[in-house]
Length: 358
Image 1 (tube, helix red, strand yellow):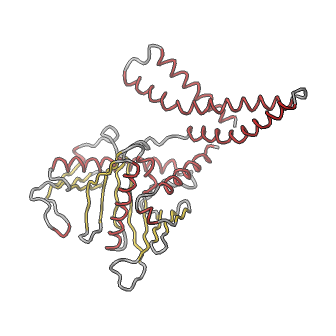
Image 2 (cartoon, rainbow, N blue to C red):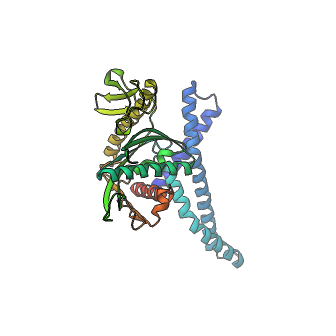
Image 3 (cartoon, rainbow, N blue to C red):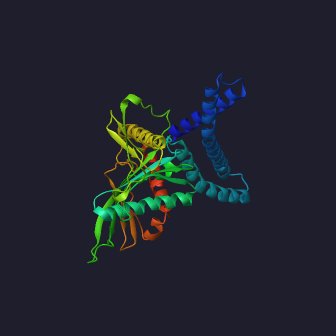
């Protein structure tokens, strides 16, 4: 606990230092002032929680002294005993609150996200499941008050999606969706299956934090840009001009294609947005892998090949394999009621990270 106390003291001192700096003449340039203001704002809730913990600790010490005083009034001691019991219950929760606030923040948590859903093994049934997942996330976004904007949908012609990409805009989008990346497996009887046998198929989900131009510098000479005529499912033409854009990032081999807009310029801008997010995610994954080398488990590894969840329709069951959580309300989950799963994943991640610093 002494190491934690030292850390709490450092945080409180830093908060006071920033307050003094900002109250005096302050930093000379606007950028430094903005940086200090953000740090001050970020530390505010932490310092408030530290002060609450310190007050409770002082009260507990005062009560202990009163209870050990042989000359103290019996009635006063009885009251002190009651107060002390309340504080003993309160203190662990306050300590945990402070520790959670002290955990290193993922700088991408507050960002918007780019969602990519792709059909995996299972043919048309996998494509239909990919479409179901895409709709599930659209419903979840609507329930959270976020904006869900499809960017590119590659349909099969039978209602399924080979690939679907959307931007999701709102408060703390990536923080809520970052654990969704991986393989999602479905077990159900396909509508096309005459014998009623249960089939297993899969779709892959990738959730990328949206990147700004300042986050990822893309050199034009590293890009090969091809334009072609857009086409829809079944090969019919979407429009008759060469407005579809395919961008290849030569250093990494990443390929992004956009054809939803009639304007070549808009398709290029959307493709660059997706490319920037994928490059930013690659760099984040590289850093996460370095940090994770010493970790035993990592709920948010983002490994696209990891099977993370099974949706069993005959049993109405949804199971997240990383945290052994099973819910028997699959119909509601598919309608976007995902908070119970997502909150459990966030709590598990926090518990894992807390265990590493204690």
